[in-house]
Length: 320
Image 1 (cartoon, rainbow, N blue to C red):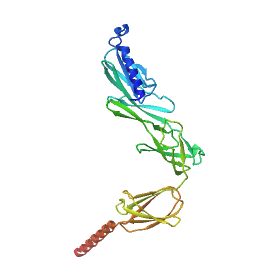
Image 2 (spheres, helix red, strand yellow):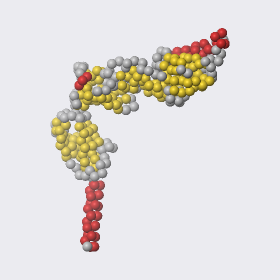
Image 3 (tube, helix red, strand yellow):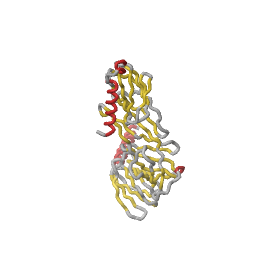
């Protein structure tokens, strides 16, 4: 059990004792019921309302209030933007209710968790491999990938808000985890360039520096059946500008991706179940090349069609 949970437990215990202690004030309000809401993750300054009365979470994410009597009450989570670079959105309650406005029945001391997602304004620096900073005006877009391999394409003409926490239900409580990102590529001066950070980053942490790599071209090859358009299996032979030839297998999607290539003239020969053909082209940026192969299936289909047409023509001649 972490220190934060111990502190939260102590605060809850003190809150309960204040209402269970047999003093005069308790006797006057013997039907009053303590209600505690804990934010997940721990957030200070989150506002809640019970029957129109407001109460706010403290530095431990605890919001404490007393309802006048036992029974059913209206509870509302009303988060607001905590800082200019942090946005908070309500996600759900620990008892499974998803609406921010709900009813809650409090007959005795009642504890409930409220889950929130947070988004952070991400404003990284862009530097080259020598640490020289790029002018932000040169950046057209950035592609980042989170720890679940979701890709996000961030356009330069918009503010970059990245989700920083992910709330999950772990019965009977809620839990929150930070979301980590990595930079995949940057489009700068209308050219897509590989980029990276020194390590996966959390958008709410300190300033992030994105290292923009040298502008090495890349090539993605797609091999498709000429008649049906389906992916082809097999491999391709690549002749590089220096004259060397390499064989590369195609994946299950009939694709091959080559990165960090030298600029120059390349030749690609398909080696699939069909008629091979060599294609020559110039690689100077990130490119995609789609090649169509006349497969043996295509040839068989064409032969059947030709035979059927010929047979039909003969039948028509006999009838005429």
